[in-house]
Amino acid sequence: MIVDSHCHLDFPDFAAELDDVVARARAAGVGRLVTIGTRVRRSAQVRAIAERFEDVFCSVGTHPHNAGEEADVTLDELLAEADHPKVVAIGEAGLDYHYDTAPREAQIAGFRLHIEAARRTGLPLVIHARDADDDVAAILEQEMGEGAFSFVLHCFTAGEALARRAVALGGYVSFSGILTFKSGAPLRAIAAGLPADRLLVETDAPYLAPNSRRGKRNEPSYVVETARILGEARGLSPDEIAALTTENFFRLFARAN
Image 1: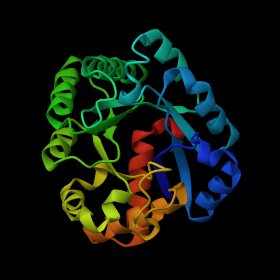
Image 2 (image 1 turned 30 degrees about the horizontal axis):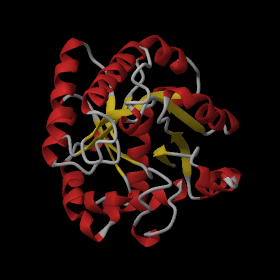
Image 3 (image 1 turned 180 degrees about the vertical axis):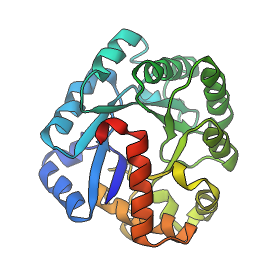
């Protein structure tokens, strides 16, 4: 079994063929999928997909791109949305200084709110971090001092320092199709050196299709290629890396077990 720890099945491109997309994932050996929330106030849409399929779960949260429009989301509101058996994670939330779609102060406030929700619920936080390594690491370290919570750096493209600081806090690091790109050698080097029990794979579908599907719409079945490349970077067979990342998935996303 392989698991896709991060995909966006609520994306409009998937709507007309959702059953086929999930069926192809199952046929490829993908045993669980987590479809990710990007707006708390659209949680019902994401949750409905998770409720439709036994092997699909979801998260609830506000993406940093949307932090400005959902700046008034309260902790109680977030906790209420998370109180559903199909919700296995908080987020994605975090910081994106590359696009700066939302004011940075709103992103930071939202990030801290989601950390508190993860702490209160015991659910892992799915973190978006782009061009904000220092601030993400500093906030994680400060907040961990206020009380423990679990988290994963999703679609990891940052530097080794952030990966190391995250792992030191007990966090996980998840790699997407970018790991398979010809330009992905630095990421493969980082992945090769991280602790085995902190590694995950994902699609971030419909984005970032792996190298053999470059330019196409990504989907969960393609995560098998990313897992294979991660295994090669670590000297593991496809079966070994599948077993490893699956074990890590269930340790982190315990409610999906």
